Image 1: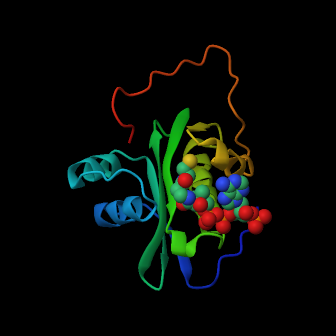
Image 2: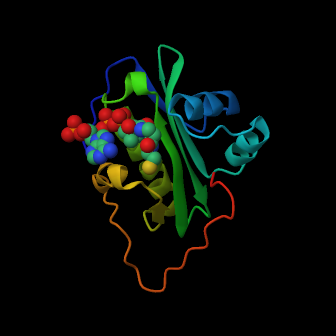
Image 3: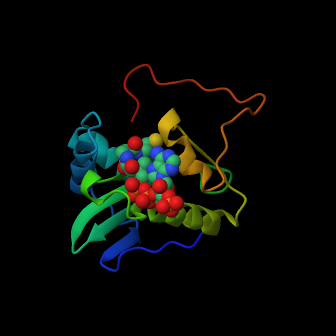
Length: 144
Ligand SMILES: CC(C)(COP(=O)(O)OP(=O)(O)OC[C@H]1O[C@@H](n2cnc3c(N)ncnc32)[C@H](O)[C@@H]1OP(=O)(O)O)[C@@H](O)C(=O)NCCC(=O)NCCS
């Protein structure tokens, strides 16, 4: 995919910190997470990505998993003031490229998307799962 970011926007791997994480969760209106939760999520991430514009954090994402056979992508978020500038696409593509690099391209990647965002992920090869024998046990309280 050919992604054209406006020049000041930079996407980096494994530079997302808990402060930026909590700021972006707030910016997109998701339920706030504690610093402790944020620290744990980031410490256990396989890969994180962060987008900055002139030093300001404008987007993020993370993937967890074993780095070889499976990964789960979460928390893809772009500050509303910066949406529609290919930043979300650059974050997802960078995460997927890094997961492919780590796994020799043999990794299966999953994610949860709302119906209105499914089309965004389909651009990267994701399809709504109809996989037989694929079972899910959702968390009993709010998902992170
Ligand atoms: C979803 C989100 C990450 C997209 O980021 P973004 O930077 O605004 O999107 P981009 O500019 O990179 O979009 C890239 C392309 O995908 C398209 N696109 C963006 N959002 C889309 C959606 N919800 N459904 C279908 N296509 C979408 C864009 O139109 C663009 O198409 P183009 O290349 O033909 O112009 C962003 O809107 C966001 O952070 N939303 C709030 C948090 C959220 O819901 N995250 C997803 C959790 S499932």
